[in-house]
Length: 143
Image (tube, rainbow, N blue to C red):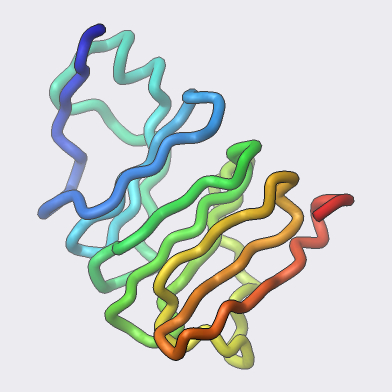
């Protein structure tokens, strides 16, 4: 086994990491609220100490506490527990943050963690009040 190490671009301290189920990509969340997505093959193939991420997300401004890919790697949830409603979803196919969720009416409060259903059709979010919120992702036919 070989361990590949590199500096997380623009990071002031990496706080969270997640890998897709197929092992093709991974994401890192930083102290500054930046989430970087890397292709594993780029990092392993180049063996650079400073690889460039394929996408950097700057939508959250407080430290990233949790990042989670869904099972097919098409969605990435990003959570910061330090700010109310500080959760975003990234569509990993087009590398854009989902603009229409969460809305101002979504009762996330201070999101603590998130998990996707096995088929990716649902996401569950736990918050600081002990509530478990369950949302259906309509892109997927089955939950």
